Image: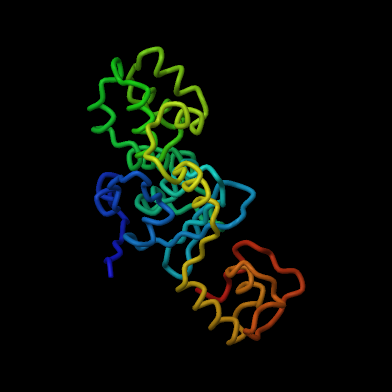
Amino acid sequence: MTPRHDIKGLSASDVRLLLDRSCGDLPDDLAEQVPQHLQVDVITVDLAGEGYLMTIGQHAVVVSARTESWFRQNFTIAHELGHVAQDSLCTGHTNASNGDEAGANRFAADLLMPEDEIRSIDWSAITLSVLAKQIWEWGVSTEALATRLRSLGISARAEVTEALSQSTRGLLRRHMEMPPGPDFITIRSMRATQRQFPAELVSRLETAVESGLAPLESLAFAQGIDVEKLETQGPITEDPDEDLSLLEGLD
């Protein structure tokens, strides 16, 4: 089993080394990588917003929205990892300062688009096919890369700047060379829409429900099914709030 690492106090480059960011034709995204390599779990469910960070006991859990935009999901998770690493936890119970938010954004940019890799590219000569390949491998949006270049004071040739004003999928569809076979763009989008709930948390929830420490709706929410379909027996709340309170009993 791959060891999972504590990232508190680590830099974005340190965390990147802990993650398997090697790229094949279809790179893994952070929703898959983080739970495998870091002491941080990832929950992917329907949310009104992009995501947030919560703690269960002393354990950090990133809650991210199901979305077809894998690049947006990656940045959300990377941002919350920044809060964990910088010990500026912005949970459902506390709010981070503007400085904490800016720091988490910098961490996310450094994690997904390392400065040394950015500066190793000749932005005055890069082709659009290579640009598309980089965006695909980094798992970021055109907007995120354009922002990153501006923040580093890097000027790209006009054609690249114009391409980065396009939608991410549009750029990839037009310029990325894809191997024959399955449509990797669609597969990656579908992967980001999948509901994800760590098995360990589901197991703990089941125990908590059976012990009367958590409502039955908590387990139904975690498994993405109706309460009536559960075999597990436990207390039922009259008005469950499908958010932080659905994980009560796990502290």
